[in-house]
Length: 78
Image 1 (spheres, rainbow, N blue to C red):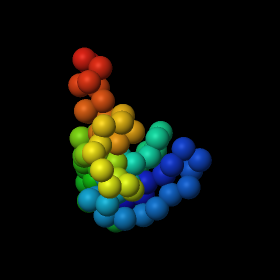
Image 2: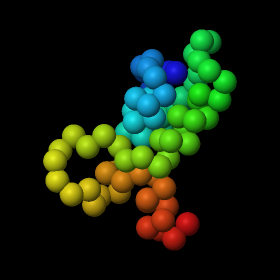
Image 3: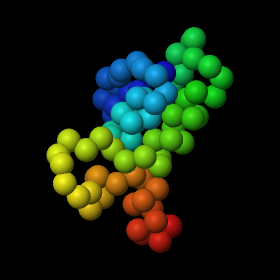
Image 4: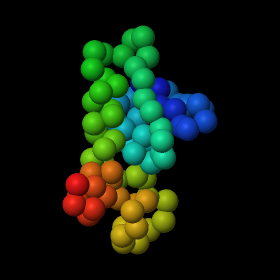
């Protein structure tokens, strides 16, 4: 799994950590490396939508940047 940010810089990793990283990026994307199991990139993409970005600061998560994409869509009624 490789996760890339908006500038094209990336990091390789497992599905679990790839999803957390993707959830933490604005306009990031993911693609499967040649040895990745079938469907890995889709699983990472779907997981990243529902998990919260990595929280760098302790405290309540109330800002849109601290919530998952799915939580933000729900707040907007979509």
